[in-house]
Image 1 (cartoon, rainbow, N blue to C red):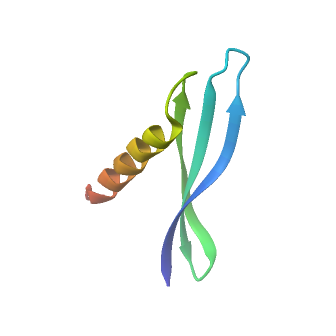
Image 2 (spheres, rainbow, N blue to C red):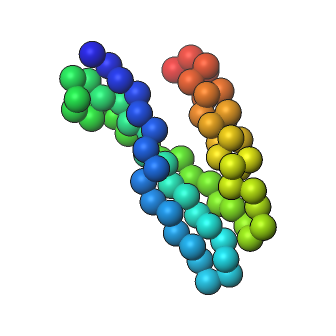
Length: 68
């Protein structure tokens, strides 16, 4: 069975208050990773994290619509 997963892999807060987020995009076959890629986003201080992650999710969904 093929399965796609998006995993919150890393969160980093820089000295200037920027939050950097790395997501792991994985494709699994029978529970074993056969492909992976990274997706990153940054949130400046004062940014609404819920809105930012909604935008990231929308972008990831749009990427899945593009034929490979």
